Image (tube, rainbow, N blue to C red; front, side):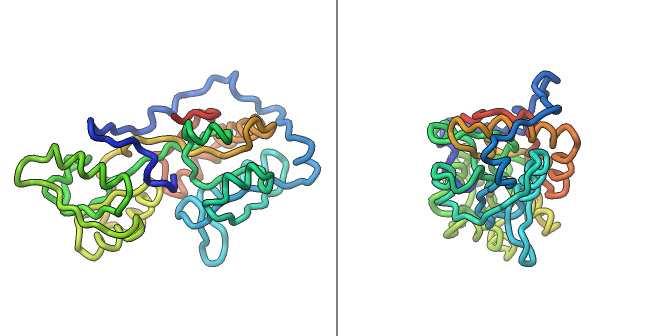
Length: 279
C-alpha cells in the first residue's frame, strides 16, 4: 500500500471487509501447460523486478539478505517463467518510472492497484490489503467502535486521522477516543508498546507482523476497506498474461498459501489473479 491516503474519507461510515474479492476461479482461467514469455525477456534469461525493500514483512532486508513475501513470490514467479530473478532495490518514488522507462520488467513492492494508477500501468492482483486495528489487552472488543474511551496513536497526515475522527462522532458522550498524535506510521507501535496509547492503526501486513512479534498486541477485527496489491507491469505489456498464468500456477500448486502462512498474512489471500481489479 505504502501510501496511507488511498482510502476515501469515511465520514459517512466504515466498511469492514475480509477477502470478499477472493472468489474461486474456474479451470478455464488456468493455463498451466504453456507460459509464453516475450522473446526479449527470455533471451536475457532474467526477470528484473523493482522493489523498495523497506517494508516488512512484504519486502525488507534481514541480516543483510533480501526477505519477505513479495521477494519470495517474485522468485516463485520467475521460476515458473523459466527465468532467474534479478530483484533490484529501487526507491519507492522511482518504481513506476522504472516500469515506464524499461529499467525493470515488473514491480513487486506492495503497490495498491487503483484506477488512477491503471491509467499509466497494468496490475496483476495478488493480495487483499487494508488497514488493521492493533490493540493491547486493555481493549476488549473488535472494530473501530471498540476504541471508544481509549487512547489511539495516529500518525499526522494519514487517513488514520480521518478514520478516528469519523468513529469519534459515533462514540457515546464521555467515551470519546483520545488521539495521541505521532509524526509517522512507524512511530505508532513504539508509543503503544511504551504504554502511552492503547491502540494504533496500520496497514495489515506490518500490523500482522507486530502481533506476531509482540504477544501483548492483537488485531481487533478484520481489515478496514481492503484493496488489492498488484504486480505492476507496463501498460499493455506482453508480460502481463505470462505473469498472471505464473501466479495461477503458484496458487494452484500450494506455494502461495505456504508463503501467506510463513509471513503471517493469510487474511490477505486473493486468488483471482485479476488484471486491473482495483477501483
